[in-house]
Length: 280
Ligand SMILES: Nc1ncnc2c1ncn2[C@@H]1O[C@H](COP(=O)(O)OP(=O)(O)OP(=O)(O)O)[C@@H](O)[C@H]1O
Ligand SMILES: [Mg+2]
Image (cartoon, rainbow, N blue to C red; front, side, top):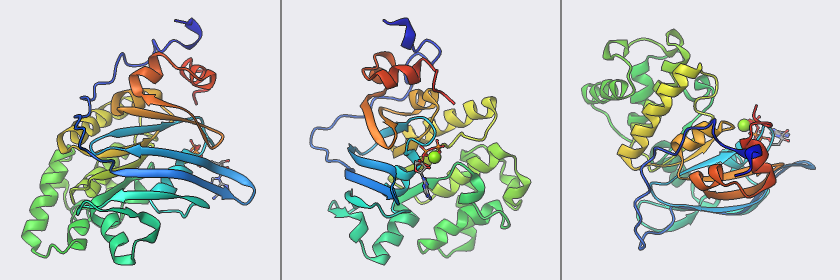
């Protein structure tokens, strides 16, 4: 292998279990020719891919390559300039997400989808308790029994390694890593089928990152979640994802199974990225 793009500095192989193959399975999400322009500036351009149930897809690329723009367009947080996104609803029907009614869209955002922000403060309410942050999502889907909600919230805190007795503390009294874990609990409590994550380990210390990644990997596998993870960290892509999309200047440069892309990158840009020259 060309030493110039060796991936020796990355974890050896992805530790995610292979996605269970079922040939009768249909895609969960279809992204078709999605483009977003900010005036004349390209955010992302002509992006297409499928995501399968239980599959974790990493979107990687240098700063400004369009990763967040693409994620926001797919998750309907932003309206693309053109293109289409289809999602398989729980009843099995494939629906165009930008044509959903308000109620259906709310259902997706509150129940079937999760969104983990890079900055936990964007995904949490900082001045209500940890328990309320988790419980709120349950109330949004109609749960009313206070004791049950509190119990479920406490269970979820435990799942993300936050002591149950911190349930009445506000997230602003938590460390960065704890906040991020609380945000994950808040998102997973409704049993979503698809979770969007933008640099989920972004602002954290390396040691905290490693533990959070471990936790995320466990939860994703255990719950059979599909996820789209934006990261500029190839080690995160290696550890979490089955498949990768490499972006540059708003376009897809290379796509493939994570181990293949990292061990045998085809595009010169991917080779550069892996040799860490462009890693930020
Ligand atoms: N609100 C906006 N208005 C104008 N241009 C924007 C806006 N948001 C993003 N852009 C531009 O779109 C391009 C892609 O930005 P985006 O934030 O999607 O990149 P990114 O890959 O997420 O970068 P980073 O790794 O730094 O988060 C950049 O050229 C950026 O300047
Ligand atoms: Mg970004």
